[in-house]
Length: 137
Image 1 (spheres, rainbow, N blue to C red):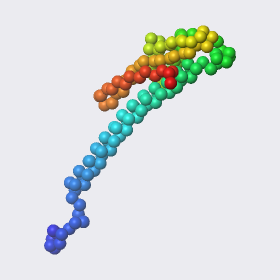
Image 2: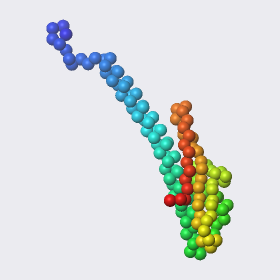
Image 3: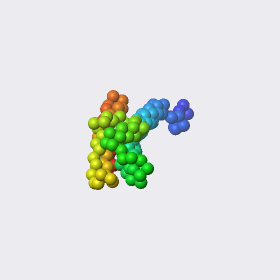
Image 4: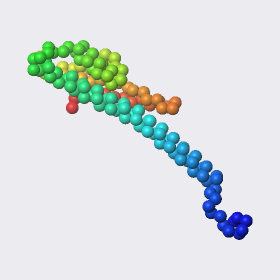
């Protein structure tokens, strides 16, 4: 009540306003943190998908199948996979890349695979994701 005996509802409670703002700021901070975490994880997944598509293209050997280029060696395939991985900011060593040949010598079927882990760091926490992309469909 004010001095005249009338209830005053136009004056907001200062404490409630401050608490509401604090809750809003904390909620936005949690949402931003979740967004950053989601983006980092999604980026790793997208890079893995892109590498898998590149490996499928390499294994298809379109140029050698139609006679434009000579057949690649296993070491050529390893280097090509590592180069493609670097384009997607994935670090691979030659021993992490598998190359297998099956079929006839004049038209081999090439299987490429990689095995790697990516560490994602968020505010002192660290998560490790394991990926195994391959040229198999």
